[in-house]
Image 1 (cartoon, rainbow, N blue to C red):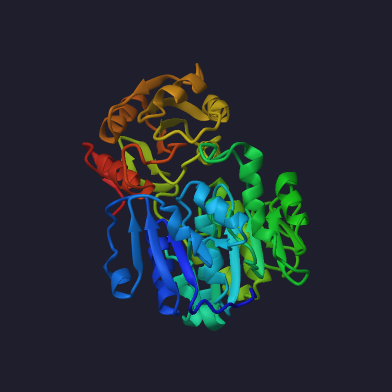
Image 2: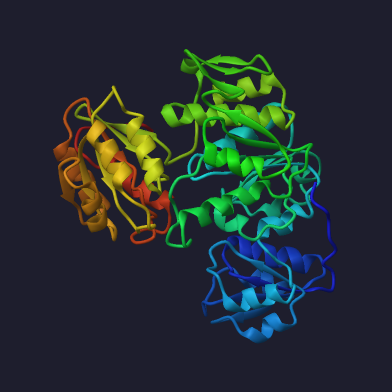
Length: 451
């Protein structure tokens, strides 16, 4: 449990007024802090509740004067590095993320999960395991619901709080101490924010920094990078996947410690990457004190989240899959390789580039690709990275991409939206991108789609 604080009377500056920033500002004001809410934008939606709570607004830039008298600064994850914040930190002013702030007020069992891919699925599955055990459970943070919203709830006071954490959120943690912390995997991502891959990896590793000997660190058993991050902390290290405590043996998911054994065919989560996600969740849940029966029940019933390898339907013998959440190359590669030996794939990829190499995507396309349709800002960079890995076509919109993919695909193939990029060139979010893809598939003649 993280040490609690009293912020009454403090002058707290909250930088960045997205959902987590607004939640943090109101949270601090309700606890007696003098709050200044700051954003570079001149117009921000949803500020009326902050004004009603007595929060001072400072919009249109980052005025150095508001930071001079700050006792504490809370920085939202989408805010890039700022000189005024770094200067305040150099003077000894605590600079936290919203999740660090929330952790100081939580009394329940805190589980924290990060990784380049799979973290939303694992976070939601662990929370479902807690609910199956009869625990009040909260799943949030990077998943959508600000973590401060768990404070004062039954989950936050005596139940299970499962926090999905991004590298951005972990940059500004200090004493965040999960009972169970997990790094599911690391691959190149967000190199538009970090100077190097090493910097990105180091941010992920901060999830273990404040753990103690009685806490637990969970990582892939065969991943030396993740193992190194876990071993740098003080928590007991546990592995999942090949060689780990929870792994796939033959046709079964097995926990070698608890005796749990579930046939892979009976897992509600489907797809190759989700086998590892299920192993990770089962291990995390057991270490969090969730009984075996509840873990098994959730493994058999939890079918996953939207826009993550979601089968939209079939058209003329071609299956269409929405994996819009595959916002980096590693996730897109995993999605493609999940079809090995089963289907050839027409890939739809593109969006806003995040700075990594597309060479692994080319390798995967050579293995399973029928072709690829490229769109968005990154299309030409992806084209250069893919080379002759598969026939490549261009599209102007998602609707156009679906039509072109249909032309390339043959009966028995799959059309897969796995963009390997963020959505923000053409869409508000990966979810909107997936919704547009699904609507385009449903508009095709002869479409037989899931309800």
